[in-house]
Image (cartoon, rainbow, N blue to C red; front, side, top):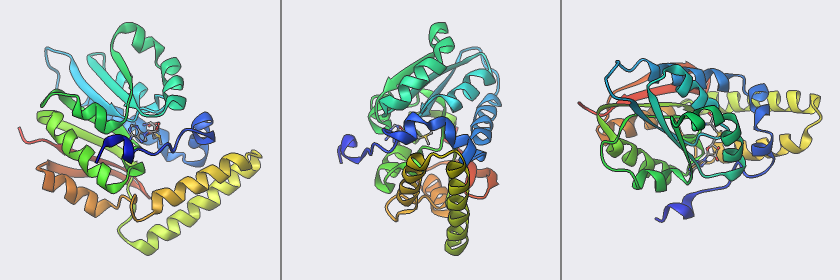
Length: 244
Ligand SMILES: C[S@@+](CC[C@H](N)C(=O)[O-])C[C@H]1O[C@@H](n2cnc3c(N)ncnc32)[C@H](O)[C@@H]1O
């Protein structure tokens, strides 16, 4: 299917305009971004710059973690949503000026398809893949595998739903309570409404990204060393490698 037809504008409105509120309703998110940056920074030193692709950079929270993790990273980051990318351009101006960062306004699959085989040492992402339709996500993962160099690293910090459906439901209810508590306190019922609608999308059968099938997809694509390096509720950091 054409990539454009599978891309939803989930961050175009109030959620994107007030994205800074995420750290209040989901305090794990900034921590996961830091973990993604730290994991890429662990790559062994090498004479050439480390080429990293970031999927869905949003306002640049994870990009900052990646770029400040070490000086030899060159980052190509894309996002399909102008509301988010405009904020990223401001937040990441320092690295844009240094020439260490390229930002693309494009959907993930379009960018990936335009890249040659084995171009990147690492592909990183945070809180993006769970937003995708499952079919689109699988195509994205296939392309990530193709563009990684042999031995290259995939790091995804994301919302991985629990395989225990009842426990997942309980966590989601707890999350909804948290959204109401924080956003009614701030009198942002407009933003609250959008995040609740967003959660319905995350949890819907054609989007939900459960942990065990997600790990299995990576293995069936040919990835090795597939691991959950961190998990707190639905928030997890998953890593995998392309065989050397
Ligand atoms: C929850 S935000 C995460 C942003 C950022 N990665 C972070 O860590 O803060 C999800 C981002 O994914 C972007 N996105 C959603 N679907 C996309 C797609 N198909 N291609 C590229 N970006 C996409 C959204 O526009 C949004 O900026």
